[in-house]
Length: 117
Length: 505
Picture 1 (cartoon, one colour):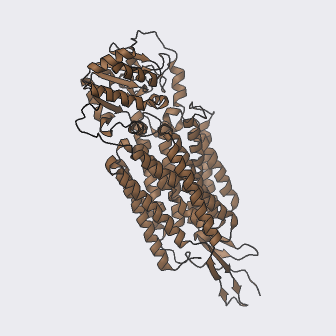
Picture 2 (picture 1 turned 30 degrees about the vertical axis):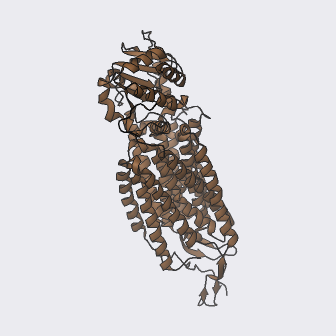
Picture 3 (picture 1 turned 135 degrees about the horizontal axis):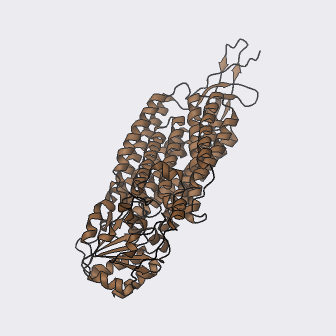
């Protein structure tokens, strides 16, 4: 006889590594770290700061990869792949443009600069 | 599809390392000397996060089976066999490759003056990616490990998503959607496809607050029932509110908007990090979220306006209407490039004050040439940067760096403001409101209380401006124009500086 019963899902659902409170703790502490680290950024580098934070916030690619790798549901797989493309644009573009900008910040070549020509 | 617990805790550790790398990436930006190393830490962290995910989530082909005995005694689930799905793997790598090519080509080609647009465009991509991931997680919760239980049904089994995860997903999707549409508007305004003028809808505050409330109610409804409609409706509303929030904000308030959207993209990543229990995403989200929030705060403080008043929008429009009336003809002095060159040659110290107009005129390179010429004449040259000069935080610093101005000649407002009194020439190029002394004296001025550069204290002020008619973004007249020690240089900024360079030879 076939009866419909809820079945436990194998895998992560049962063996969750972290509960909500431990994740929340990481989040709250990271907010404090972020607060102090960002205040120590020199104002001259605020544009590179935006570019690099933009690049690292594309760590959302982790979720996109999970969706793209999962079998069983075509729509969510394709959404995942599109998200992988978008996040990769950001990752590569963000780091590349940051590094291009940072390479431009130079100190004076000679401390007491006499006339060059 | 899931690996053993040992593998998972290894992955969790790797994500934590990635998170720490991201902290070090931002830490490196405390000085230009360490910034490149910081950026490399960021790349390493990202590589760790991506490789870890690829390894622990290899696309598998498998046959799932649900068996049930007559009395419910024998329950067998799980794949019978599984192998790596090569095609899916190649698809993923191709997706990364496509993104890499587009990203790197864009980053190489973009002009430094277009940096604010680029950052806005990049923010919109993060927002859209967050939305797509949230939708994917909603459609396929098993893959994300957020299902509490699965009800086997004919056809697709129905996975009941953990309610906490549903709240996180709902919020992540909403913040992502707001980030996306808001950044698209910010991009259009910064790129000049859309007027920088504020667009004011009637009762916009009411509409916005109502929409935000509706989104929160829908998140609760979605968490409660897992119906499709609250999820889709909240997505649509979130896209709409992102649009509505940014259209009333004027062009010169864009530094705040870009920082705010930066912050949102972080919170969206953090929300999805909660869903995936991923420490790298949570740490990054918190870092980016606080970074954007702090930058918004710095920008608002530099304009002496509250964050709420900037977000409420309409600044440029209302002030311009009021400023046009009480206009009187006052005498002012006009100078030529030769006069300017002569004055600066004789000077001991010249402080250059660049603003958004310099970026528009692309005058940074010829400005540096002028600086070099002056140095040859034994003049000390310094640059003074107001925090809100330009269209994004640090905009002027990047442009000057691009033109090879050494960063130790560039000073922030509080570090250089006391020096104007001992300076022979203040050279204002493309800035206006940030030099207006009315901010210090005139309580009725819309910019009263805003910290300004004390250019009028210099012996002579050279003020490059296109014409005498126009007013700055705040729509107020600048008293500096009419002072005895001010000489107006009326011309396109780049042309004027070119002429001064010629005159300096």
